[in-house]
Amino acid sequence: MAKNSDYEAALEKGTKLLQLLTDPAEPPPQSYFTDVEDLDENGYVSSTDYIFTDMDRLSDPFRDLGADSEMVDNGGKNILVHHVYGEKFTQNLMVGEFPNTLLSVLTAVQGTLPYFAQVCNPEAGILIADGNLTVPAAVMLEDELTKLPPLHYWSDIAFLQYLSTFPSPPPQPLPLNYVLRLGIMNHDTYQVLGNIFAEHGLHQCHSWPGLTFDIESEEGRAILGTPNGSGVAWMLIQHKAQLGEKKIKKVTVFHASASGDHCISGRPSLLFWIV
Image (cartoon, rainbow, N blue to C red):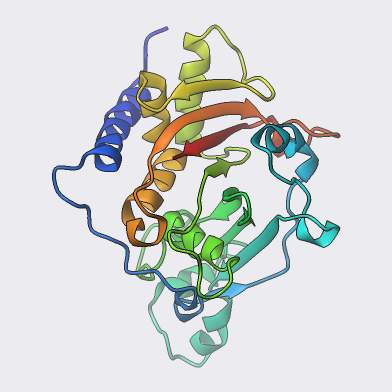
């Protein structure tokens, strides 16, 4: 099967990101966002109004990683961190304190407030990206994008959410061994993965242990160049002071199956192995 333009673009981007991760010609700029308080200061409100997908679907990979798969409410080590953007400033908008901003767009479209939900296991160094609607994605419903908040990239927001699960002061460097993008919904990522499945004679991804690719392989670089892969790369690239010199060793593509087989479980998941 011929590789399409989306795949070729992801491969080119992933190759460049791998260079930034391994041996950059010059040090990439570091993120300005290094403090948990940056979330609140930029309008991200902590919320408990989120139901995480069934952790049972991750029992096999977590077992093989030697990690606990229970949520903290059940005596486990996994902590849900959920933030919603925009709620904090809605009342201010109504009294005219923030006219002509992005929030006027968001509040005009019900149900499109950006949200970020990660499950963090600080003991095992695992970050699970479960449900994320970024600010740029939310405003795509409108023709014009007016103003983005300074803090709007998933890589920065998820890093701060992960950081929030550690005691203060956090350990240095901050342990991060695995990043799991669970139940991929992004169209561009899905297209690239579909191309890879076809190249390997598959109609869909398999349950754990799935397919694993060295990050320097063509498939690994193409996955790294997808929206879901590049976010992980940028987190490592732009938070070296907090995470240390981290690299991605390999990526596993698998189907996170669960009882009842909810719709999201039919989507591929990506596990990035970090060293």
